[in-house]
Amino acid sequence: MSAPSIEAPQRVAGPVDEASATRPFSPFERFGLSGRVLDVANWLSVAAAVYVLITAVNVIGTGFSLATGGQAEALFGFATNPVVGLMIGIVATALTQSSSTTTSVTVGLVAGGLPLGVAIPIILGANIGTTLTNTLVSLGMVREKESFRRGFAAATVHDFFNLIAVAIFLPLEIMFSLLERISTSIAGMATGSDGGPVAAVLGGIGSTVKGATKPLAHLIEDALSFIPGSLQGVIMIVVAVGLILMVINFIGRLLKVLLVGKARQVLHAAIGRGPVAGIGSGAAVTIMVQSSSTSTALIVPLAGSGAFTLKQIYPFTLGTNIGTTVTALISAFAFDGAAGEIALTAALAHLLFNVLATLVIFCTPWLRDLPPRGATWLADLAAEKKVYAFAWVLGVFIVIPLALIGISTLF
Image 1 (cartoon, one colour):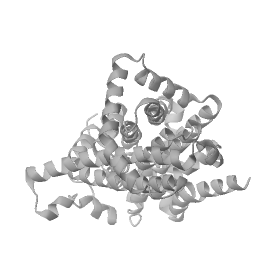
Image 2: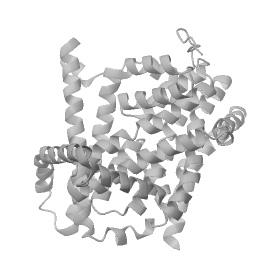
Image 3: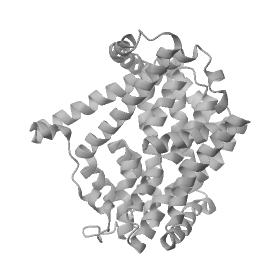
C-alpha cells in the first residue's frame, strides 16, 4: 500500500500547529553562522555533548559508589519492591520529560552498585513515563473535537501498548528474572574474555571512551573534593544528573535543526507501507533525533489532521520505543571492565524489553488489537468530556505512581 498524500494536510487548530510550523533554531545562528559553517558547528557541538553525556554517566557511577559506601542495596531498600521501582521510573521520566535521562542515569547507578533487580523495573517505568509527552501534545488540539479525538487516540495508543507490555514482562521479571538473565548472558558474551572479536571491539571502545572522558570526570570530582564524606557523592550525582538533562536537551535541539527534515522524509515515506516499515521508521526517526518524544510529537499532529490513521501510526510508536534505547547503550560505554559489563547489561535490558514486547504483542492478534481499541475508547470519552483526558494524564503519570511510592514507604 502506498503512503498517503500529506502535501496539504488539514490545519490543526491550536498551539500544536504553531509549534510544528516553527523552524528549529540553532543557538549558533545568533553568532551569525550560516550554511556549511553552521552545520559543522552543530555537528561538533553534538559530538561534544555526547562526550559530556558519557562523562556525566561516569560521574554518577563514581558518585553513587561514594554516597552509598558499597551499601547501595540497603540504601535502595524501599525500591526493592519492583512495583515501586516501576513507579519511580514513571514519575522520574514524566518530570524530566525524557526517558533517555532516566535510563542513562540508571545505567550510571547500576555501574556504581545499584542492583539490577531494582534498576530494571525503573527502566520499564521509563517506557511508560515517556508517553506523557505525546499525550500532552495531543491536548493542544482540544479545541477542535474531531482533531482532538484522532490526535488523542494516536498519542494514547503508545500509552496502552507500554502499559500492556509492562503488565506482561514485569511479572515475568519478578518470577524468572527474564530480562536480567538474557541481558546478563548477552553482555557476558559481548564483553567477556571468550567473546571473540565482538568482545575485543567493545572492550576497546569502552577503554578508549573511558580514557577520553577521564580528564573531565576527574575535573568534576576534584572540583567537589572539598565536600566531606558521602555528601560529596550525593552532590556529584546531582551535578551529573543536571549535566545529563542539559546535554540531552541540547543534543535534541541541535538534531532537530540538522535532521528533523530528513526524519520527516523517513516518516512520510514509510508510514502506510505496512507494520514492518512503520516500526522501522519509528526506530530510525528516533535514533536520528535522539528523542522518542520528538518522534511522537511529529506524528500526533499529523494524526489529528487526518493525514494518517491510527492503524498506520500504531507501528511507528512501537519503533520509537526501540529507537530510544540507543542513548542508554551509548551511556554504557562510560565504563569498562566489570562496571562496563554490568552497565551494558542494564542498557541491554531496556533494548530487550522493547524488542520482545513488540514481538510478543504485535505478533499476537488478540494482544495486537488491545492498544488501538483502548486508545479509541479513551479518545471517544475524552472528545465528549475533556476531564477524562486530564484525569488520564494526572492519574497514570503522577497521582497513582506517587501514591504507590508513598504507601510503600509506610509499610
